[in-house]
Length: 530
Image 1 (cartoon, rainbow, N blue to C red):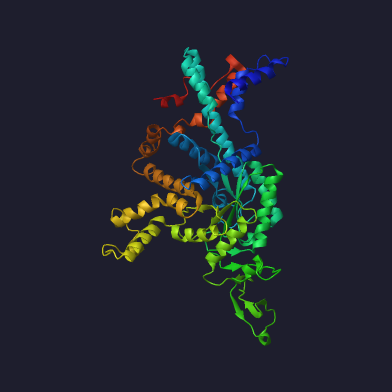
Image 2 (cartoon, rainbow, N blue to C red):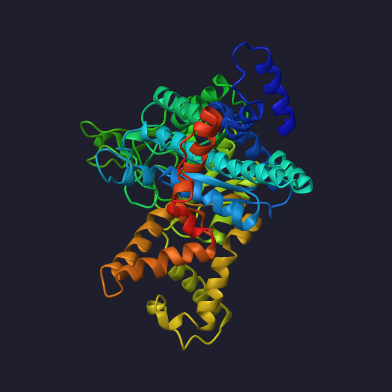
C-alpha cells in the first residue's frame, strides 16, 4: 500500500461515519504507517520470511552471510538498528540476538544470575516484546520526521521535494528485523518448552534457539559441568517448538538446534534402545564403560549389554554418566545430523575457541549427509580473541619453519606485540573471520552474544574515571556529548528519541490549534539544531 492509497482508504472510511468530521484521513494514514505491525504474530510472520530469504541467498552464495549483536534492553536493540540504517542504508542481513545469559545476568528479579536457567522464563518473551516495541517506535519516529518534512515542503510550495519525500515514505524500510531468541534447554519438559515457545512467538520471535542440555542442570556453553540429554528427549522439544509455530500460523518459523556436546562430558540418562544401531544405541555407544564379569556385579550396579558383552557405565556420585574422552566431535556431528533430519533448520555448535579448521571439519562431516547444513555461530566474548588468534598465527608460522625468536608464546597478549607482524596478521585473521568462516565452515549467521554487556561496562568505566576525576564535567562533554553531536548520534536529542515529537504530532491530530506542544521555541533540544 502506498501513502496516497492509505489516505484514500482512510478517507473512504471516515466519509461514511457521522460525526467524524474532525478526523483527518491523512493523519489516520500516518498513524497506520507508523504502526504497521499490530501484533507480535504479524512481526513473527514478517521476519520469518526475511530469514528464509536470507537462508536461500546464503545457499546460493556464502558471501551473503548474516550478522547480529546481543541485546538486553529494547533501547539497545533500537539503537543498533538505527545505527545500521544510518551507516549502511539498510538493515538487510542484520538481526538482533536475545541472549539467555544476558537475561539471567541483567533482567532477573533475583538479581544477577549465572546462565543456568534460574531466571524467570517469562522474562525472555517479555524482552522480545520490549525489543519490538522499541523497534516499532524507531519506525514511528523516522516516519514522523518524513511527515514533517513533507508538510514543510508543501508549505514552501516545493512540489518536487514533496514528491520525493512521498516516494521515500512509500519505500521506507522498517527497523523490525528477525530476533534469534534463546530458549535455553526449554525450561522443563517438552510441554513446558511448547508453552514457552508460544509466548516467544506471540511476542514476535520468528527464530528460536534450543540446546541439548538437560534443563535442570543447564550450564553456560562456556562453563564446565554441561550435561546432555539423549536425542529423543531433544527431538521432542524441537517438535514442541515446531508445533507452536504451526499452531500460531508462523509456518516458516526457524528452529536453531544447538549442541553442547563438544564440551559436555556427561549425560543424565542412558538412552532407551529399541534396536541395535538406532539413535539411542549410538548415543550409548559413546558412554565410558568397563567390561564386567557377571560374578562381580555389585549391589545397585547399572549395566548395559553391547555386542554380547556386559558393560558397566561409569557413574558419578551425582548419578551422572560419563562419556569417553575424545568423543565430543563425533557426538556433535551425530547431534547435528539427527536434529536436521528431525525438524531443525539451523545448527549451533558451541566450541571452546574460534577456530575455522575445527568448525569446518565438523561441518564437512555433517554436509556429507545433509549438503545444505548451515550454522549459527557464537563469536563469543568468552573467547580471548587476541590470544587465540595470536596463538594460531604463532603455531602456523612454527609449522612453516619461520623464525619466531622475536616472540614468546607465553606472552602473546602483551601490548608489545600489537604492532608486530604477528600481531597484525592475527588482527587480519580476526577481521576476516566471519567472511572466511561463512565460506569455509558453513556459518550462515554470526552473532556476538554479550557485546552490550561489555560495552556498557567499558563506557561507564571510562565516563566514571573522567567525570569523578580531574576532568569533571568536561569528562562527559568531551567524551560523550561532543562526540554525539559530531558523529550525528540521534540520541543527542534525547527528547525526540523518547517520542516527544511523536506526541506533539498526536496532539495536533487530536486537538488542532488548541494543542499544547512540547517542541516549541523554549525546548532546549533546539540547541542541537546546529
